[in-house]
Length: 359
Image 1 (cartoon, one colour):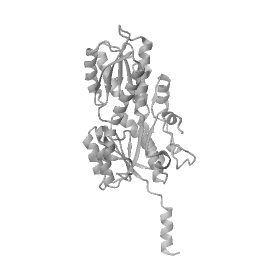
Image 2: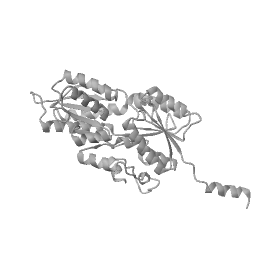
Image 3: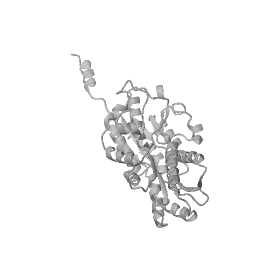
Image 4: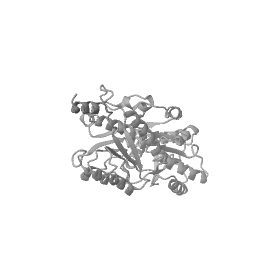
């Protein structure tokens, strides 16, 4: 047998090298939300045969950008996922595109102010593959609506028959924060008897939320509803409530967003009256898309380049118990792949599908 034929047979016999995917997390490594997202992503990567590397920017926007630039060198991955926190998307995508790294934006996408600079995926920046984001308005809307309904049910109105609300949101520049706030406003339009006294940014920080909430509760002592843009903001506000001799779940109701075990426990013990979550899975779902793309199944062909999916569920005590019971189990992410399931017409990235373990 000729040497060239032998070499060809050896190459065919060798296993294909796993694609390397880098994810730049905007948060801290020990931050509950991003730790949960990383855990789901690692499980997906293992199932799909991807080599996943996660880098944490430690809540430093400049670090998010510098990490992309560092990855254009010897550590250059085959694919890059960026979460685009605090207006960093333009610089991240430009740096990755200049290095020829195929990149997918996940969790947050293009804001209107960034559209002129970026255009659409694969146009001005040919290596920007697209985006996958949760419908973040759903989180704000679902949690606000459930919070208001519980306030009405408990009759926590002021002498004029109004429900008074204060709100704590993440920041003014992150896409998901802005759109959660829009969901809150949508709910308020449906309930004219609710008065939003003030909404303030707590920069996603529990300690800052406590200080902000304490100030607001003193300014608006008749407030009975606290809408929060994340679970950590809600827990910070609860600490302020206790200091102000209010009782979470009784005379002061709280909502939150996220699926931490602490948040689920607060739903079960009644301190949280409304909780929306499920979007932590966006990174894992993005890996399904990249796996399929890497195997020749481009999501742009039948789903477009900018995917926005309903990923949020509203958690009552029954669903919270189910989530705590089942969230640690293994699910096979190959079931959600179009490469492994050729008859799958559209990706199903809903939270109910995650709990079922199948699309």
